[in-house]
Picture 1 (tube, rainbow, N blue to C red):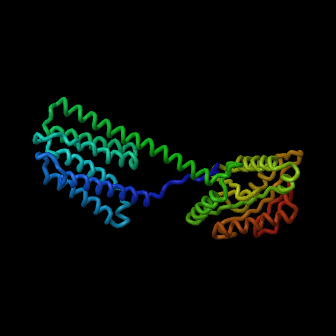
Picture 2: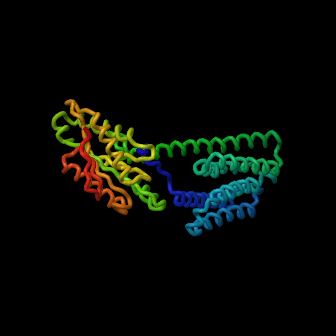
Length: 356
């Protein structure tokens, strides 16, 4: 049963943000790399190589920021950012002068930058591929420095382990954040009393269903049901009894619908039901079954609860969700004016009398 929408972030805008963050990482790396050549440094430092590495990062960052929006959303760009970032750090390790006998600069520390990037933005396969590339390039540069085998192995294990754990930890944190954001979105669209969609969530689902029906040239039925004499129930037995009645009615409506249908509480005692690929006749039939089901619920005084239902059909009774909701409300109020506990189909003179 569809009671709350599943939201996904917009791929285009998220991809553009990912690319911008990569650009700023390049600019930060360029600043640090170029600064290293300006500050006091060992004589063995290969200044030309360091300047070239910094210039590469500077150009990469500026080019990404200058790209048209569509290109910044390209799916291949984050992968390219990671590859260039790993190459830039590897080049810094190669040119730091250690292979000429200079002291270690430990530039490999900056591998944590691509590790943060892949951990936050990449999936498991992307993380694994990036770490494999990083491990291979770092092994190659350690070999080119011609370190003692034991020292090279120790540095490789420590560096790759730290980078891998950083990426994995951040990936787990990102997954946790995504779950929390999803829960917050669902909470914002869920009625806490009935655990159905609220008006906001229903409006979003309604727009999607109408658009889908428009593309596929299929009908959608909308039912608006209102609990009869709800104020009297509240006044006589208290708000707790009214809340219990609403929760029971909501659960009954859900159980009476299909898994593809959407049930929502859109007002105080008003419910709405979307029936995809269903016309007004199918909506009428369901409304009558639901009325009979609700009649099996008793209030605190032992009286059966009843609902009045209005039924409309897209596109016959309206082209937009607003028009359909307006017409369904009119049909529901028509059922109220005819004595309650009945169903009225919009554009039909027939009002279904209460079931015996």
